[in-house]
Length: 387
Image (tube, rainbow, N blue to C red):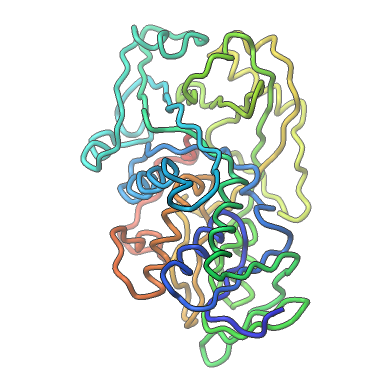
């Protein structure tokens, strides 16, 4: 265990790995990342990892567009393989208005997010396995796709290590020393690391890390099920991610011969991230299949191959908590992404690193500051995690 560092990052999921890489690239000094288990051991590993700038807030659109450009040139920009599959993203909708769609198409146009509006008559040509009613339309995000969450994280870790970042696994943080209103050190079972700056990238454990510094973070951890299936023959031809805004379900590739599906949004199922049930019940599986087969009839007979439950670090308004937090000098956060953190993470790290190193940044992360500003608005509705 090293005895000191300029910056300590807690958590080696995708956000922690991205920040570590960008801090090293920015010349921020010595950086150590502490991980209680191993790289990508937490919610990152189960992420849907979908990448599309379909949002109603400018900050998310900008971040995802920036991250998409990185994914498109991953080997050149970061090095290695992120498992990026740019097969496009197709949202089914009954209306293009913002509340129904969960996105602002005018804002997306102004910010340069490419998309095509798909008329009802043209939907079957893009999604021949699906059935549609006459009033349903679509939004096709031609640069949308998905990545391999673990490969993405591991390649960022490798890039950060090449720049001198030290990752320490099996190093659960047990405390943060604060004196005279300033961070002094991070404590683990293996020793104490003196530092003046800690960044909380602990994801589902973010509220616990905050408490170690005397900071209360309004984060709840909720369980969300995902179902896995064999691909029916009609879906073996590559096509777009199917995001059904009417039945509130998504369907995407999960490797050769398999599909994954999950509901939009979340239902209250608060759990302990250290001991929650990671399986999926028969009732949950049947619920997902019922919604999927309404759109894709061939899914009625395709075999189930199991599933799993992921966890979201939910905040009251659905936005993450990013930046310096509380009255403690040297305590920063990058957590509370509530199920929407993957697509923007490679870019978010760059902008937090810029803020830490007092450099300019093209994206202002202040809307994610905690406490929120008086003019902050919550995500569109209680089921805002739109896939």
